[in-house]
Amino acid sequence: MLGHRIVVTYRAGDIVLPATGNLAADSGKSIFLEESYQQQGQVKTFRWEIPYGCILELNECPEGPKASASVQQPRQESAETARQSGALEPKVRPA
Image (cartoon, rainbow, N blue to C red):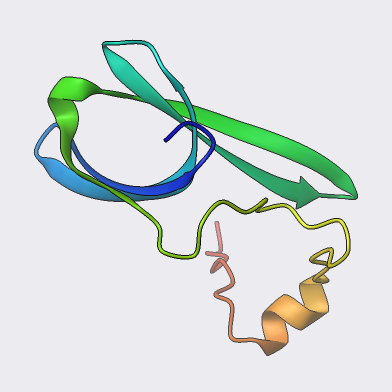
């Protein structure tokens, strides 16, 4: 399944979390998921480790492997657009 896109449900302490990414490696004790994204015109990669003992469920995604950072469709969102889309702004308290 190396290189395939997978969905993992895993335990982190008392919390159960879902994760989706490309299966980058398997050390025999844990798996490594990898996700790529584009930020300010640069493709960046995020990789995280999930130990076998924490995995509750692991399935291959039905759509198959895909690159998550698309150079053809960069995500560019200005602060103005973020405000218009209903993004929360921090409240400033007087001193």
